Length: 117
Image (cartoon, rainbow, N blue to C red; front, side):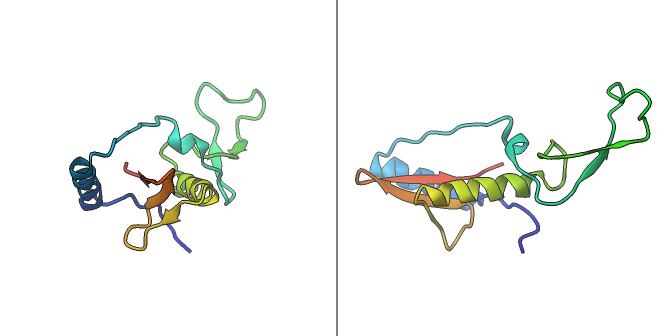
């Protein structure tokens, strides 16, 4: 089982940009600031109550997370697992060379999706 979520290598990104430039393809880039907050955690993860947000008379209790948080070591893996399932459900094909590179043909045009952090 994969223990981490890798990102596309920059050589792959440079290759895509080069091919797109030569072929006249359009390139779109998005930055999703809340990416990791959308990952569903598959393990049980508990955290201490954050200072200032303690539950009165339950200060020694902990929180059980349902979704990922920033700086949580499982966050990238949780997000990758979710985006992988989604892209596969849209008939994207995962690259054999780079597990973070997906492609699909839409109306005869290539659609390439790569994750980069």
